[in-house]
Every structure is written in C-alpha cells, then in structure tokens.
Length: 327
Image (tube, rainbow, N blue to C red; front, side):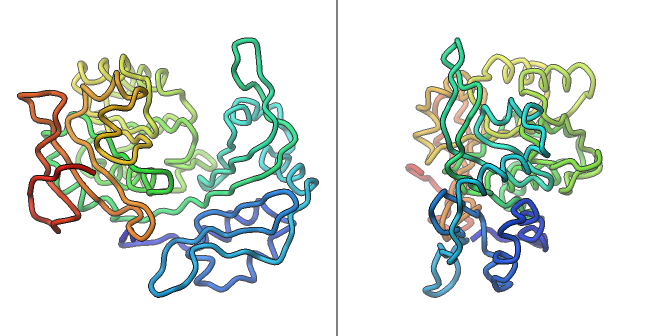
C-alpha cells in the first residue's frame, strides 16, 4: 500500500458533509473504516457501499451498509453538489463529475443529453453517484522523486489504472519540486490543489502557482507567457501533443499522468500518440494492495526514441537498477 509521512485526518468527515441525508450513518462507522474508505457509492434502490483500501489479514475491501438510496436522494445530492445552481456547473455535469471543496470528486451516472456535435451536453435522471475521497499523503512520491535527477527531467509520465493514487503522487511530486524550482499546476478539475477561499487545501509547496479550472491548452499558454515556470504539472494528459511540444521547446519540464495499465499500453495508446515521443521518463503505480506504490520506472533510450528499455526501478527487484521486461 502507498506509504507516506503524513495522512490527512478528517477527509472522510469532510466528504460526508456533502451527503447530509446519510451523514449520521456514515459517521457511525469505526475510525478504521473511515480511514480506509476511498469511495462512497450510492446507487438508486441499492444499499450504500464503501470501497475500502486493502488492509492486512482477511478484512473485506468493500462494505455494504444497511441503508438504501432513493432516486430522490440522488436528485437532491446533485443540487447540493452544485450549490443549488445547476446551470453554473453545466460544464462539469456534462463531463460526468463535479469537484467538491477539499478536492473530493463526485462522479455520477444517468441519461446523457447529446448535442449537435454528438457530444454530451448534460446528464439527467441521475441513477448513481460515486464520491471519491481526496487525501493528501505527504512523502508518497519521495522514492520516485529521488530516482530522477531534476536536471535530467524533461517530461515524466506517471501511469496507472484507475484508483492507483496517480493524482496523490503527482501532488506530492509537485511539492517536492517546489522546494528548489518554480512550479505551475494546471488544475483543470480543481483536484490537485483543491482551492478553497483562494488557498490550496493541499500542500503544493511555497514556489507553486495554481491555474484553477484552466483547460490544459489555455493553461500551458498562460504558464509559458506569464509565470516563467521551471516545471508544469497537470493531471490526465491525452491528445495534447502540440501543447506538450511547445512547453518542451520552451525549456520547461512537464510532469503528467495518464490512465494506463502498463508500459506497453502507454507506448501504444492512441490518445498518447502525440505525446509519448516527448516523454523521457515513465513511472508505473500499482493498485490494490500496491496502491500508489512504484512498480517500475523507465528512462528513454535516446538511441531509439520509442524504446524505454533503461529501467531505473522495478518492484520485482527491490531498489536495484535492473532490466525490466514489461509492466
């Protein structure tokens, strides 16, 4: 499991404030369950389910509570998430999630409303909500950070399956960089810094600037023209090859994440085809009992720009530098 020097307390309690009709039931859970809860799943007509982080022994990774969710509960929750101004959150709703104060993300399912360009313009008749709890784990990126000399870092891609703590590690990596470098975070979904009253909920370091809710393309332009960063940090990159190239041609380093299950997937993913040639480090994070744990770190072989055969770290071999055939 992901290791850290500090774990936020009260993240669960903060998140359930957005679920007032279920708050008492959720807060009645043990301290261990509250600390282990990663997601709270609410499905119409079904019992509340807590998705838990793995633990030692035979304890379950999922807990079903004896409280059913009604369709009207989900309708009310959407109003709460939008602060009773749904039209103000139209863009986020169309994307299927809303970022809440504290960096927690409420994703939801329902009926899509399709616009003229075959794009989702709204989601109606909500049938389920998944509240993903954001936590800060200071120190979780240190193994990765210590393996890469910053002066050699041109572009790092952190990959992993869903729920592999990519954003958590990315956030802490930015904090580490900020000790000695100017960092700009493009926080497109408001999850990395989780600004509240213009201050970050999470520690991104004293030399970090945050472009809150900026689309990545606009964020890249603003960062380069106005903020003179040494590094730009952003989450879930895909299809932004031109913007990535512009940053790297300006001498700015990039730290990014992407959903991929392994090295080969990253190298062959169509959504990353315009980006992968610019990357010089790829790091893979684990899931399950290895959530957030570094599974592999590859450095580009500059004799062959599509080959990441130089492995700096493999979880299969402890801390030794050794060849690693795949993810």
